[in-house]
Length: 69
Image (cartoon, rainbow, N blue to C red; front, side, top):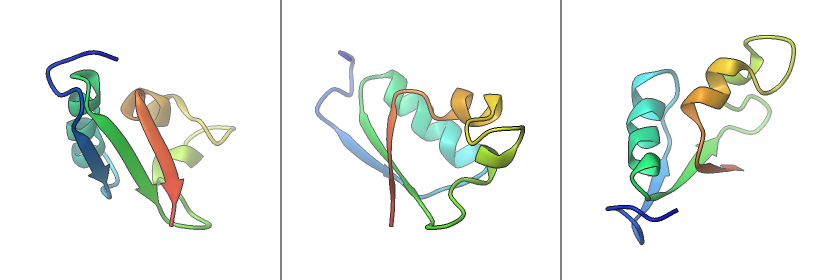
């Protein structure tokens, strides 16, 4: 994705709304955002719904890569 922040890498270690939303805005502007999740739990929004990818999780984490550490 091309954008004003192309070539910038952002590490996201936040959960819930404000941190992921801020990282989402950076990703939408072209930054390479890597979301760090806890082993066994992951992002709390993953479990909102029937699957591991709730609508809330997907809307806050588009254009991001994810890794568990």
